[in-house]
Amino acid sequence: MLDKQTAAMLKLILEASPDGESVVIEKKDILEKIGQSVDIDADALKEAAERLALAGFINIVYQDDEVYGIASLAKGRAAAEKIVNAKKPELDIFKPEFSSPINLNKVFQYAFMGALTGGIIAGAIFSILSKLI
Image 1 (spheres, rainbow, N blue to C red):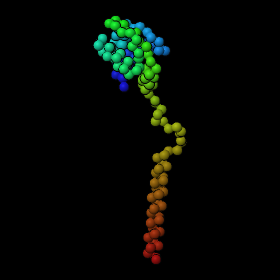
Image 2 (cartoon, helix red, strand yellow):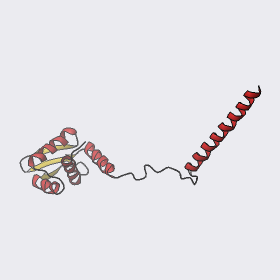
Image 3 (spheres, helix red, strand yellow):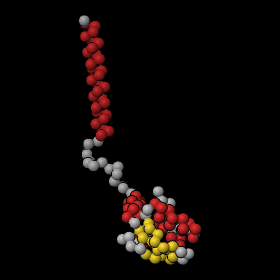
Image 4 (cartoon, helix red, strand yellow):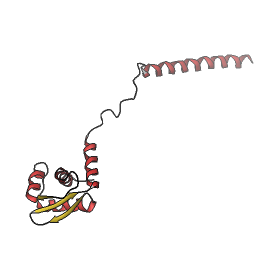
């Protein structure tokens, strides 16, 4: 699972390189854009880039003190898609696939009362027959 800094950096890289082509991004631009939503500094940026590269999400083509040459990889695009889909709540997960006009509470109550009444009647009949025989 990606932390907020790494996920924000992956999102930014995918916006710059959606089809996997290499792009040159200045580190100060990354810090400005990511820094709006996540607290990040230059060291954390470098660590996040290394984590993404080690995980196979991006390819760091070139790196110096001021710029990154980065390309997004298929694994990174798939991971970002999973992150986006995971953030969309499935509101109808617990909805039944069909709706019924029958109130199941009433059905349970009537079934229970019928079974109880039948048990009492069967017990009475057994009791009467056992005394006669």
